[in-house]
Length: 333
Image (cartoon, rainbow, N blue to C red; front, side):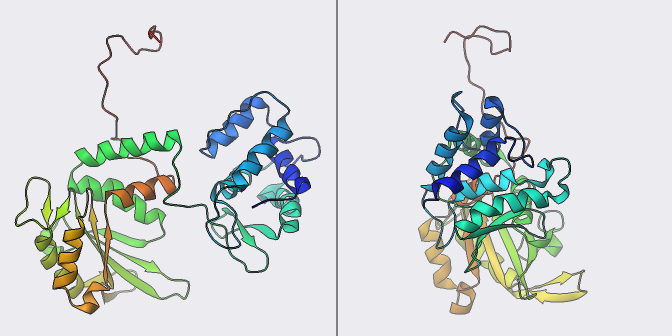
């Protein structure tokens, strides 16, 4: 995707700030670099003229693959969202109304418009089709900082308990994704579990409500004859899934009972293809359509794409260097 030069230059001027764009922060070389760090992008200003350098970066971001028709590239949309954060409002521009009007001048020329949603977050949509540009791609290449974050979460998933997987990883993820009434029921009171560790609901744009149950396992799910170590056998999951789909949940917000519409089977490790096929073979057709799988790779991709915070207990293993790594120590490289 390409923007006309004058439009891209206007946006670059807003990113760095100048006397013509007083509704945006003035950023020196150091703060330009910090801005892109906030966007989790690896760009460091080289001290050259601020506007041409930023314009070149934005042009590069526009060359990313498009997430869909009539949408801006993910990283470019993220830069605009960071730029228009309401917490960055300048004096005299409450709600960033004036900044929004200024940014929409170049965006409108390119067939897009920016707006604030009910959540006060900035979005960009295509003017004609009203298609909203997403800022999430689960399968894009990762930056070095994201690779480190991913490794940190892998270490945590290797060491955490099943309860920690649910409380510290799954609950924050599903809350962020917009699920409601998330209730953990499985490990504190077995009498109320009925095959699920967690249940939640999701309200559709039509106001219809769908209920989900989650059966979570810490390790790998396979089709072996018996569970071994942290590996769980899919045959054990089978009975739990049947219980999950057959028992009602009580939604205290509506004072009604409802059956679980769909079941998530979540593993902190791998879910083997053989395990998926075995479960699909023993469930009837209607039940198979209700089952969704989420393994470690999917969890990691969600955490990186949505920029979720890694649990505080997550730490990379210490490396046994022959020297001290204190702040004042001399490191031999």
